[in-house]
Image (tube, rainbow, N blue to C red; front, side, top):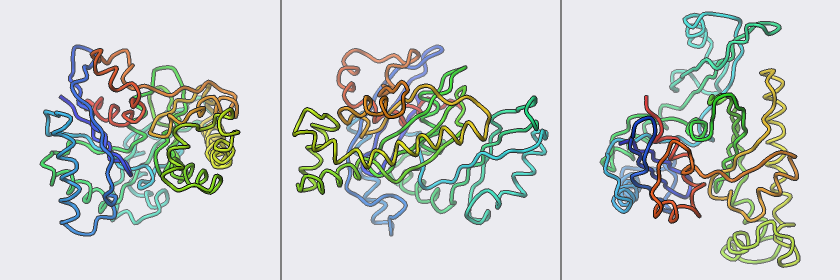
Length: 340
């Protein structure tokens, strides 16, 4: 069994998969909203234990059998950069990253865990180069996440970023796609080529910003704005299009970041830009969002269902019960798919 635990800013999601031949079978899945402080802001062990109880209850309610889990770190709390090197050997690149890491990350190396991955060797480029992904995570952040999960009686077998997990969920050989994970507080953008995460960006604009815009635009309470947003979204035929007009200026911020991301990817890697966009996360179900992004970006846009992967077997009853919420599980599925 393999378990992925996605600890979001407002929701916990867990998925348990069983390896079956060359594919997987869904054994269990569950999600729960929480009002607790985010893990990185927990002040003492009492607060840690309270958060751990939420995780324990989720595992019990979802009937998760394994205590070994892979967890994710929010994209907004890590540092990721793609660095260009001359055509060095793997050993030379490892040494260069070790000695030059402070040039690539905004925190002292002694306070961070730094990892790197070779993405692509462009031997026929001008000049020839190697693209290397450098990731740095504050050690204190890792310790806090480990403390909470261990306090829930679980064993952490691996930790990775949300977008690395998503690249596993949506990536495919010989294809380049752009991903947008719409959460409550942030929208994470990634470009994945041949199942490799080449580019990532975290934008501090997402579902809560949409709700605030609706609240201000229509003069309604925050609770009412959530209801209006979920019901009408970008539909111009309802409420004279007032909800959509409130949301669109905020959405433009995200669209501009997606465009910048594609331009930067093409300029820095000399690769073709993606031709399709996959949406995930709780806000991806906003009515009319996919159609609006298709119009604004002039590309194919779809809301992804991680349970529809051809190598993942899901029984009919589970498929029906998860259908409406499938996009929120994309990170958790990617974490559970991790095999190494």
